[in-house]
Image (tube, rainbow, N blue to C red; front, side, top):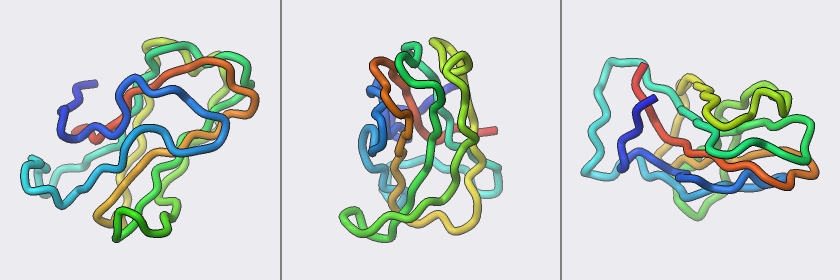
Length: 123
């Protein structure tokens, strides 16, 4: 999976039990190179094995203002810890309804270790 630095919202960020990981990405930023007409995905690469948790879920949230109330846009399945290991890659399609700002939230109860890099990638 190839990431563009401008399209990253989490770079080697710790997986948290239930919360936002990394930064908010502004899709209306003038310096982004998003190809219109091509399917894009939210890409997630695991940089460090998940430890302490039995599963991990990734949720992409969106909002029309950076500091507003975010809503869930797309949620992954609950991946077993054995699949959330260094080098694992997950892609979630960007559905209709994506607003200007996006962020990633993880849910992994009792997590003691694990890191991800996440951003927008082409098909």
